[in-house]
Structure formats: structure tokens, C-alpha cells
Length: 408
Image (cartoon, rainbow, N blue to C red; front, side, top):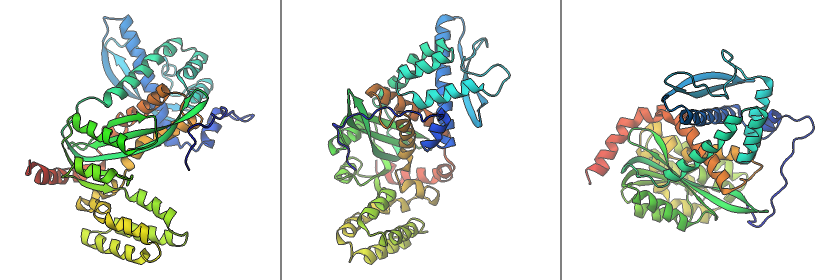
């Protein structure tokens, strides 16, 4: 549903009588896994900022990496990367008491409140003041500034020329501007490097709805920063984007997201036909060869062509782009068939949007939360090559060399 860009900002949601911060988080649908990650990255970032401030006051000491610490926040187990220094005297104030693995009940409530209600830096500072962590309150500005600066640098720093895969997608959100909400699109590009690691290449914020001109700017920006050769580009079927991607990366396969096509089918097909379409499409995705998948795709189109000629005609024209993922090893076909890699960023941002009241309080607040989401992934689950990619990495690099290096 389209959102009126001039609509008024709704009042801030209030806790129901007797409702705790934990109750509010559970009611919002926040899963334990995401909550653990958000709390872990928040505590880790605050610790880094505290260490930075400590080193400014103690020039004779030096940073000395991190160590992993297992903590408990109520029933939630946390894995926190704790910063340390060479002389060992520094200790982040946000850790629980020495030799204790868990936080006190009061600290638990305040930490969850900080996460749930930090619509702005000032709101986070207020929560830290209640905890008696004045130094952390001062350092919060440093955390915010560092995350925002890193986000802006991410959109300008030089890139490696080669990628195994490039995943692109846009996310619509709203940002508060006075007493109105402004529409905004976040253009995200995630690269799968030849070493098998995922990295966010671009996270560009534009105050308008998703549009083709902004996509041109984002993709050309990747090329200007050094990107040259890509094995496969994975995207949704945003109107007009496919020919642009093909022209900018002529030697790459372009895969249109199967999940987006499945969602579109639900809006074009009847309630009785949509489940059958989904079932047949699932069989195409799991086919063991390109030939079998192609035959099943043709059967699917033939089955629904009479009732839905316009929709089926459109996906038939783009058949090769819906089946491009089948050219690659079995273990990566699932990840190469959708833009779910980008959704990992969007999913964390969506949690933060809900916790912020359904919109972001300012452009800087959006940059801060987006920076947290990206940092969380790159220092967390993306630090290591996924099992699926690792199993196919040699094959992917061999395909890359035979197709792109031989033609260079």
C-alpha cells in the first residue's frame, strides 16, 4: 500500500499498564536471535567507544584487540566482543560486576529499555544516565559518529574489481521531518568476493521512493569505485532495471529474484491457483539440471497462460533471468536465486524501525541504525564464509576464470 508522504506523524506508542520493556519487545514480534544480536553489537560498540576515550586519557597504554565474553541478560545468552588494552587496566563499564556472568534485574530492564526505546541519541543517553554510566553517555556520541562516518565511507571507498556475485535491492522506509513523514529508499548492494566473504558495498539513502535514476547512480558508482567483473547479479524485477544491469555488466548473468516473482504471482493469480503456482515453482528451484528445470518452467507457464496471459507472458520473456541460478553449483543455487542476502540487512533494519515507533526520527538516526545493522552482520555471521559458499568456492572461481579472465 502506498504511503502518503505528507501524512502526520503518529503519537509515540506508550506501554500498556503493567507492560515491561521485555513485554513490548515480545509483542513486537522480535525473535530471540535478533534481540541477542542487537544487544551484543550495542554492548560491543559502547565498549569500543569507552576504550577510545580511555586511550585519549592514557597515552601510554595501547589497544590490544578483543576477547569473546559470554554473558547472560535474563534468559538471553549474549556473546560480546570485549575490547582490551595492553596493560589490562581498562574494563568497559557496561560489563556486569567482575566474576559475574549476568546483569542485575535493574540493569537488565534498563539495557532492554535502551534498545527498545532509543529513537534518538538523547533517548539512549537518558537510559545510560539511569544506569549511572555517565562516561558511557559521553562516549555514545563517539559511537554514533563513528558508525555514521563508516557508513558514509562505505559508499565512497575503492572496491575490488572482481566479484563472484552482486546482490542489489531497495528498502522503503519513512523518516520524520518536523511533523511529517518523508518517504525514503535505501539502496543496498552486497558483494560476494572471490574469497567467499560477503560485504556491504553500498548503503545509499535517498529521500524519495525507489526509482530508476537512483539505481543508475548507485550502479555507476560501483563501477567508478573500481568494480569491473561480476559473475552473477541478483536483483528483483524493478521496472526498467534489468536492461541497465545488463548494459553495465554485460558478461554477468542476471538473476531475477524467485521470491519476488512468487509474491507477484499471489497478487496476479486467484487464491486457488496461487498455491499450485508456488508448488510448481518450488519444483523448478529444486530441479537437478538446467534442462529439467527449463522443461518444468515451460510446463508451469503453459498451465497458467490461458487464465493469466499478461503475467505469464512477462515471466516467459524473462525466462533465462529467472533460471540463471541453475548454471552454478548445487550448494549456492538457493542463495543465488533470491535477494535474501540483502534481506539480512533489511531484516535487522526492520526490527530497529519497529522499535523506533514505525519510522526513524531523523536522517542521522537512520544512518546510525543502518550503520549498526551493517556492522552487526560484518562483525558477526558474515565474518566467516558460509558453509554453502565454502563448498562451492573452488568451482565458482573456476567458472569466473573460464568466463571472465579468458575473455579479458
